[in-house]
Amino acid sequence: MAHDVFDRRRADGAIISAGFYNLIIGLTLCWGFAVNWFMVQEIDPQSIAAINPWIFYGGYFVSCLLGSYLFNSSSKPIVSFIGYNLVVIPFGFLVNLIVSNYDETVVVDAVRVTGIVTAVMMVLGTMFPAFFKKIGGALSIALLIVIVVELVEVFVFHMHHGVLDWIVVVIFCGYIGYDWGRANSIPKTVDNAIDSAASLYMDIINLFIRILRIMGRNR
Image (tube, rainbow, N blue to C red):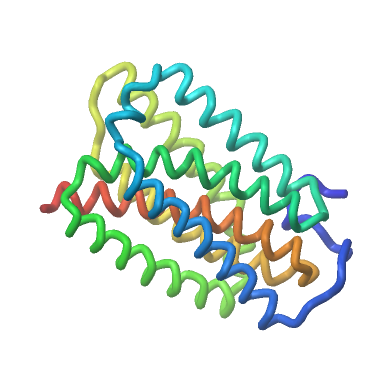
């Protein structure tokens, strides 16, 4: 079995209709966003900030990596859903810390803009799948370069250029179209729908965080 959901070319479960497939993707995404919303509402960000950074980020990466492994390697929907939640929960803690630094109106506006941009990119990914498939490699290289530049800026020069947030927004817009196009090119099974949603979730959350930063600075 392929270790990347989008490399799958044979069905490991029953084929479902395109409409039901996309519905499962949508419901899975909504579940992840609902969990994050609940965490932001119910967990005090100060209690998260009080956690030792090594423990927090160590747990964050371990949980995300384990979750990614589960939903990429399993053909069982329940296992993939568990893996998805192992990604959603640590992202929820991180989002909680980030949104606590912004006014509620800015957060709501960022959610709205992220939703609109996501919908537009999904439509474009449906209309022009070949184009997004061609830019997949360029997106990966661009993201890697931006990550390296940001790490150097933060840990060496102790600064952050706002233009990098705009660049990351463009990159993740591309990733949403890219992953949506790929999601609809693999066998339409319940497991593949959940796995595709997991990949799209990470694209959308990263897009939201950058849009929030941009809008927060502008306010």
